[in-house]
Image 1 (tube, rainbow, N blue to C red):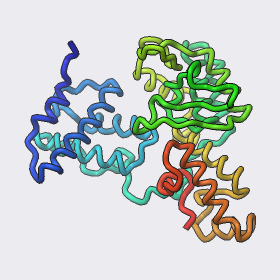
Image 2 (cartoon, rainbow, N blue to C red):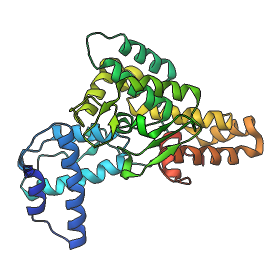
Image 3 (cartoon, helix red, strand yellow):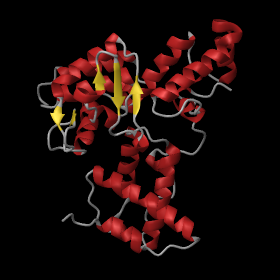
Image 4 (cartoon, helix red, strand yellow):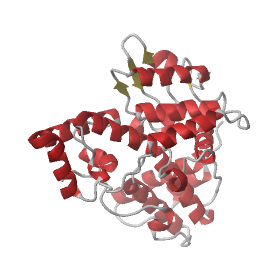
Length: 319
């Protein structure tokens, strides 16, 4: 029988104020905070013992999975409500100290990691004999870069069942955001070469009939080992200008340039400069090319085409 989680139990027992619908939303969102906290291997058992350190680890883990600052702030707000319900008023009210900032999702600053830095990281990782799982980590990081996958998606790919070599397609169905599967079509030779290299690390998972790229019996703890391997080999904001999620930013940056023939907005000083450059490159058809590229990126990212809030997060806003 599975042991109950005292933090989750505490959420249901907490005394909250306000409408029932608001209380329900707070409890549901706080459950997600606990889920991420447990995946990060932090074992606080009482809400009175939750600290800023726990909030920071949750922020880091959510950001590594590609979650935007708006959602992180929402989860933090719910967790603070529960903390206060138990008299814990020591959590900072300023999300900025956790690297979570207010503002538009259309971040004007590119977080893409350059291809040169990525290749250097992969080379060092593959040559690292001091860490037994370095090769496995390198294979998954390459998939994140070549296919625009999130960290958890790259780890939980079921290559034997979901890679269709004849049709050059890949079904991404495990570890996806919101549990929504998607198919990546018309895979390039480079993408399929990365999948072929990853094939070496296929392991049985805890799902019957499913194999993935995580070490046997390690489960989601592997995701944090993957973070560790990336940091150890220089893939950090300080050293590389971006983290693991920056690989996804760079993939979508490349898709945009390949389709339009010009750089996205967040590669320019402001929107006016971008529009002038886009017009110089493509003339009056630049808005159409911009829209087509964004639709492709939003679909590849696992969202619906037309979700400009999503492409804005990777490219900046065009208007």
